[in-house]
Figure (tube, rainbow, N blue to C red):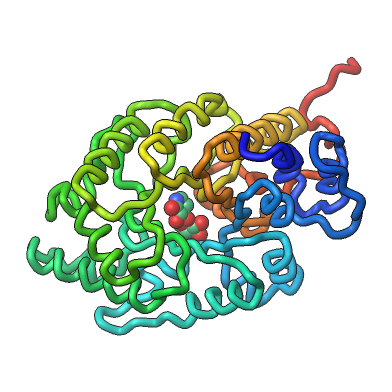
Length: 353
Ligand code: XIL
C-alpha cells in the first residue's frame, strides 16, 4: 500500500462514477481521511490522494454535442484518452493528408482542464486507413510508411502527450505474436523499431505497450513479460505496460492481477489500467451489477497495490457512449456510470412463487 489514504478510492467509488453522493459516502466511509465536503469530491480528487490519475476514454462527438458529458469529462477525471481520433484511419484517411483537428481539440480540452493525455495509439492492426490495407506494400515501403506515421504523429503532439500507447494488441491469447500485417511483412523487430521511432520523435513521452487479457498471470501476460524483459535488455526505450481491463462478468475476475503487475513493476516498468470496463449480459440485473462492481474493484486494487501503476482509465462513460453494445452482441451496461446508489430490483428472477 502506498499511502493509508488511498483506501478511500475503491472499486465502489469508481462504480459510482457520476453519482457524487455515493462517491462521498465512500470517501466518508471511515476507511480514509475524514472527508467533510459532501458536495465536491470527484474521482480525480480521490485518485490524487492515492497518487493516481483517473482517466476516461473520450468520444469527441459526445464532447462536442453533449454539454453534460463535457462537464463530467472536465470535472471527474485527471487524464483523458482519445477513444478514436488519434488512430491511423482518423488522422490520415488519405495518404499524405493529415487531419489532426479532432485530436488537437481534445488535447486543447485536456490542457484547459489541467488533464494529462494518454496518446492512443501509434501502431495497431485495427482502424488502419483503407489506402494502407489495400495497397499490398512491400516490406521496405511498409516499414518506411510505418516509420513516417509514427514519427509524424508523435512529432505533431510532441510535448503534449503524457503516455503513448505505442504498440497496441501485438499478442494473441496463446502468447504468440499476432499474425498482423506488421508481423507478416516486417517480422517481430517491428515492435522495437516502433518504440525507437516514437522516442526519437518525442523523447519525453512515456512509451507503453498495451494489450487486453493480460490482467492475470497467463500465457499472454507471460509472453509480454518476456518481450519487455528482452526490450529492456536491448535498451529499447519502453517505459510501461498498459493493461486494458476489458472484463465481462461471465468470466472470473482476475484476482491475481496484483501478482501479475508486480512482475512488470519489478522490472522497473510503469503500469496502468488503460481501458477498464466490465460488460454484463443484457438485460443486466443486480447479480450482474454486483459482479461488475467486483470487476472494477479487482482492477483498481491491482493498480493501487502496484508501486509504479500511474493511472486507472475507464473506457468511456456513460453506457450511451460505450463501444460494448455494438461490439459484443447481447452485452452492455459496461461503463462505471451504470451504477445507481442502491441495488436495482432483480429482473428475470423471482422467488415469491
Ligand atoms: C474501440 C472504440 O471504443 C470504438 O469506438 C471503435 O469503434 C473500435 O475501437 N481496444 C483498444 C481500443 O485498444 O482502441 C478499442 O476502442 C477497444 C479495444
